[in-house]
Structures are given as C-alpha cells and as structure tokens.
Length: 431
Image (cartoon, rainbow, N blue to C red; front, side, top):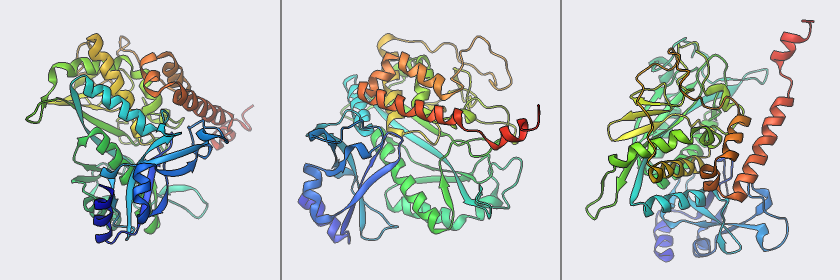
C-alpha cells in the first residue's frame, strides 16, 4: 500500500510530507518528512521528543520519552497552498503501543465503542472564526475597519471586503476534497463562518484540523490574523464550533438512521453536560462566551441552561429532523477530545436508557427557568465537574485527564493572578 501511495503522490508532484498531529490544546504540531520516508512513517512514525508536546506527561529519558506520530495513509492530501507538500495525519504511539493520551487515539477508542454498540456517527462541524490584525498600538482589532454594524450577521458589505481571502480558502478546501456549502459573516465584528458537508466523525475532525492549517496560512499571506479565540471582544458574540450529529445503525446496504436511540444519546449528553464543558469550552476565555449576557446585536447565541428543544438555538441541544446540534463547543476546543467525550456521554445515555426530559420551546435567554440546571460559569467549575464525572474522565483515561486538569488549573490560576486594564481603570483611584 505504501509503495502505491508513494507513487501516486510522486506523480502529483509531491516531494515532502507534512506529518501533523494535535496536542492536548488542539493545536496542530508536526514536522516535514521527505516523501521517500513514507514507508517508515506508516510503519513506525515520525519521532518527536515527548516532553516537548503539551499534555503528554512523558519523561525526558527512557523508551517512553519518544512520541511517534504514525501516519494514517487514508489522510494523505496534497496542500494547494504549499506546492509539493502533502499532509498526512499521525496517530500517537509510545514505546510501540498506541498512546492513551493522544487525542486522536482517544477518539479512536470512543468510536470503537460506538461501533461495538452497532452504531456509527455522521458529524458536521461548523467553525466560526475571526479575521483580525494588530493596529499601530499593537492592539488586536478586526481586520476590516469598516465592519462596524451593531447587528452584523449576514452583512454582505463586510463579507465582500475580505472576499479574496475567503475565495482562496474556499478553493483550497475544495481542492482538498471538502464540499464547501456556504460562507457567511457572523454576528460579531470580523467574525465569519465556513461550512462544509458532514462526514464520519474521524474524517470531520481531521478536516477541521486541515481547515485551520489552511486558514492560518492564507490569512497570514493576506496580512491578517486567523483566530479561533472564543470571545475576543466584549459586548459581542463569541465563536462557536457547533457539532451536527446523526446516529446510524450498521447494515449491509449502508445503514439507517438510529432515531430510536438518539433520544437516550441526547439524555446522556445532557446528563454529562457540565463535565463535557471542560473539553468543549476549555479556556478561561470560553466562559466569557458561554451563557453570556446580551450583546450589541441582541443575542449571544451561546447556551446557559441545560435543555433540549426543537430548532431551539438558545439550548445546548437543538433538535432537528434526523440529527441534533450540540451548541456548547467553542472554537478553542480540541475537536478530537470534544467529540470523543460527547460519544462516551451519549453511549452512557443509551446504556442507562436516560430520558433527556421534556423538550423546551422557551427562549431560554428571556424566560426564567430555575428548574433547569446550568452549565458551568468558569473553567474551574467545569474542571470540578470533569473530575467528578467517571464517564467523561474515563473517556480520556487517567494519564490524559491528570495532565489536562493540571494544565488547565495553571491557566485558570494565571488568569486570576493577572491584573487587567479594566481593574486599574475601575479601582486605582476609587477608594
């Protein structure tokens, strides 16, 4: 197989492989490898110093100090913006064994359990993102100075000004096999969304990583900063990373929608919603988006109460014909970990026959519902919920959950210790 793949890549003008994996933060990492090394890459992997990768917890010496990203041949894809280079996604291996703390391996485990339950998942991921720049004083601001409407959703003027970049991004993704469906201006200044057609869960996660690589590189060439920061600007909506999920039963003829178990799957997602936030909204900035107050546009599009409802964008679970949308994840999430824990929560709901409760048609921003539990309002609160939840923490495994929680507690502590300009302006002469 490697010889045939190597030949096809060479015929396409490829001379170098970009071996890519994701660290615990969901950031793309990797190295360049000559195409001639493809057999070794598929058999053993490209080697990295394990302690240099966030979240591994690997030692500095011995056989477990080396992290190998073993190439997945099915992901080999020429990159239009890097002529002669093809990306190949690597799975983490340590000491010759699948590495439990590799985010892609975590997703492999979850999807194997889903398959053992007779189910597969189709997943559509909707990334929202900002196009930014630094002004003369070094502040990060929207790249488009004229993007100033109070309600900027679907504004065509602001969509057209960066159209050269957006069109180039669309063409690059389509050349990589994406079926791009739409691009729009979202509800904050400098905010956009690009959607492509759903696929199986692993493919969709790999495609999100490829989307980020393309967008970062192309934005830089246009003098802009591509950002998946959840909420860069106060008083405006933040960026979500919504998951559209459908469950399918195995069948020789291609499968059928598993609507019969979807309700219990949603029950599991809602039952574990607070712990899931630690992976779906994993930064201190995430909680400025999640459950936020009203914005200049009139809404924040982020959930607060734990509920589900038909086409209800104010709830974490928005139910639609044949699928549901999980609206908690934000743009900073490690997509592999967020999807893996979502799967495990849903499987727990199926195993226990959990009922998600009555559907809500209420506008949960305007309607007081003290009977509904709430999502966490801080990263620390979400981490507490994760550590108390054996299902979600179990999906990560003891090594990864310990490393993840330690890193995120440090992040929260650093944020609490920081003294902001807002505090100085408010308190310096107040007393």
